[in-house]
Image (cartoon, rainbow, N blue to C red):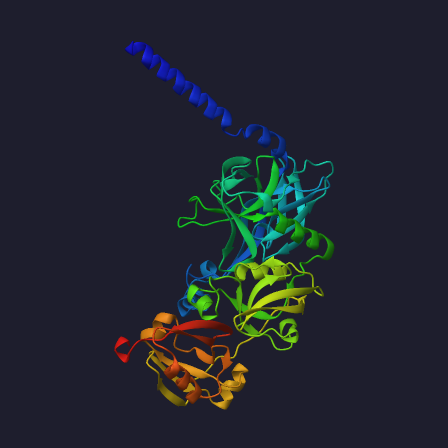
Length: 464
């Protein structure tokens, strides 16, 4: 009887294993069908070695000494740097998508197909903001990938990466979508797809497939403390990449919209101080004079909740929505102003570089203000002119509540609770009248940026 029971248990276990095996995805057919459209990209670039000791600046006195006494060994030299990456063919006449950081500075680009044919490639265009590049080889009847809808992928679904990690051509790895819409501090134009498919140096520019064999992203970056794979890989959504490649092919460059504002993320404290029940939208910290937003009547402290019917969850999303709009388009923005929603029509302009280099010097009048741990000074006329502002209080020292709130020495306070500051006395009075435990919204000039900081009002000077 005992033997029969054990046999039955083993039979049930084997059935469960077989059923689980049947439910696991089979990547072999996908790789066999789509793999030939994935290419290996190798590049060469001329690099000038500054001579001297590695790690020392070129103008370091020690390097100059070495050059004088041993000029042959320590003079600058040119050498050829080589690198590897991946890409995939999007049209049978030779257009290939990859990353800008793979081909952007290359002197020569060689594309190798899975059948070992090699071609020299030329760069059609690159876009550093999204890290998307379009290159072309002179060939016909090439295998191509199929592209899918990157917006429809779901967190948890299987994905497959094909590329040349560490130079190992046509390597296949699999994983799941870990998250969508990831933003990096240095780049807000790309809502990255996060996966745990193993991606290493050399995978850059290669495709990320869904189980239907459609490309949903371009493998672009890894987040790692070691330089190798640690379970977090980032891919550029194919929708973003195709829009960029179409513009590169048509215009040779990418045209992006702008409305002329600086924005910041809303914290819980900031949201509450503006009358919102939760952090949502993008807080406008400054408006460019005579820019599209200024002409439309947008103001610092407005919070953008919707952009042309699209809800704005955070500041990164607004950057992408504005950047993806065509210049000249008229859009409706829903903003939160004075604790109420308001619609504002804005005509989108074209992205241009902004230059700002004035920084505050030291003020000459002021002192301790309130019980929040601030020492401030009024800016003199020359400082105000350099910063392009009418009035400001320079933070000369900070501690206590102010320091904990994030205010830093060198900040210039120019507004409180959506009001522009006009005097030291005004600021002191607003702090005096603020209730203990409440928050004041300080509008601050920090370097070349404008930000809002919620200042917590302490209960007594003993807290400071």
